[in-house]
Image (tube, rainbow, N blue to C red; front, side, top):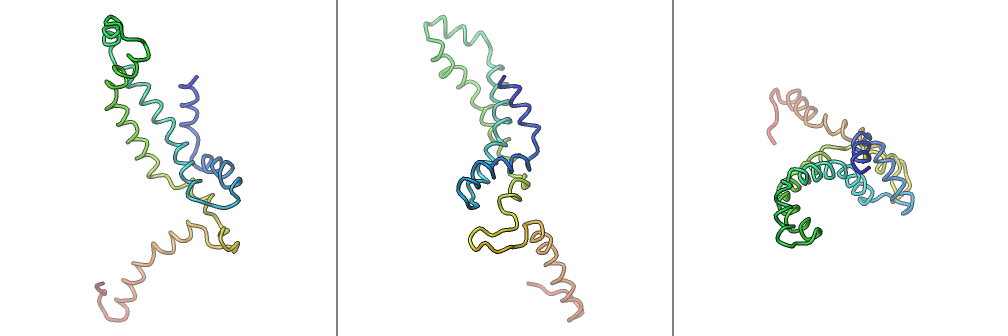
Length: 155
């Protein structure tokens, strides 16, 4: 069941996760916050961490568990002390992979930080327009320097 839910959640687009975070956090708080983005990132990290943790725990040899059982260690203590400790490096790798995946995602931030500024209630430009506007700034500085001085400015 966990595997199925993890696979389904892994296939959900990030904009849908942003809508869920909007419904869970922004609608309840009645204002936009970084918490909404954090919730969206956490939801997106769950499937990657769950799947890598599952695979790392399955890679621990059964003989290691049986050796602990043979020494009289209880099942829960074997799981925590032996199995999880053996798989720790793989679990940490999965967490780092999940962080890397969500670090490149931006679609879930478009909804919580959309066209209405929560502090003033006035309409503002959405983030994609800002990105486009500021991406042209170095080009404009370069071309204006060439047009005015015959060469590019150095800043």
